[in-house]
Image (cartoon, rainbow, N blue to C red; front, top):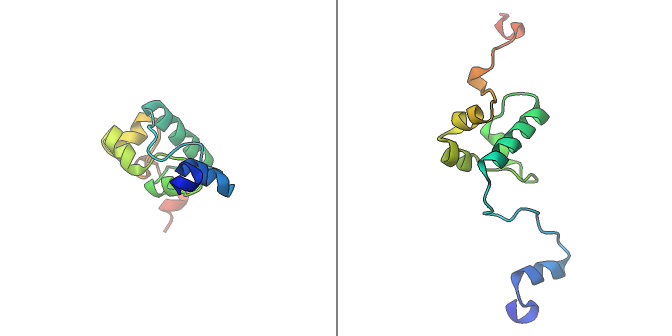
Amino acid sequence: MRSRFGSFAAAVHATGVERPTRRAGMRWSDEAIIDALRDLAHEHDRALRPEDLRAPHRDLPSPELLALRFGDWHGAMAAAGLPTDETVTPGPASNAR
């Protein structure tokens, strides 16, 4: 590949495939992580779950990165000022039997 295209990036470019704007392994700042979490929570209009960050078509920090930066999932949600499933107060419908 290198002898034909010169580099992996050139080979990818030759295929016509668009590369993602954020390269794998690119560093996320704490502020960028918090902004991404707040944006995603706004889109979902509910407490986020770790699996919400697994969308393959989205450029999102991984749950593992959140744990590394903020201690755990709950720490990341607290840093972003977001509720977790445990901190969401159930509505009246959930109390009906």
